[in-house]
Length: 96
Image (cartoon, rainbow, N blue to C red; front, side, top):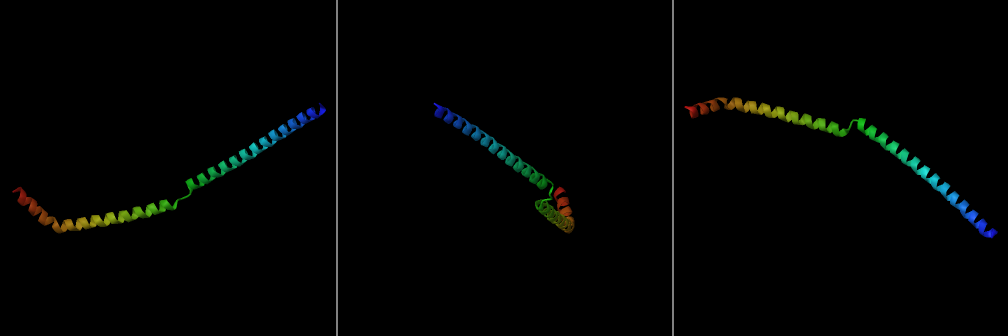
């Protein structure tokens, strides 16, 4: 009988030790997850406020498009000035 009681007590102690170890592991994992979350938040905030090279590329592309637009407008003005007299005559002749 004593032997059975000792085994039960031993099993109970092992169960308590397992429970304590389990709780320690949970605390460690929780701590690791909190640290990972904090690192991710920090990296996210840094990326948010860090000037991106993509924005610089976009600015360069917009400048190129603006230059092309201005060049095209000058070409349109040039062609219009060359053809203005002919266009007016053709419109005048079509009307009358």
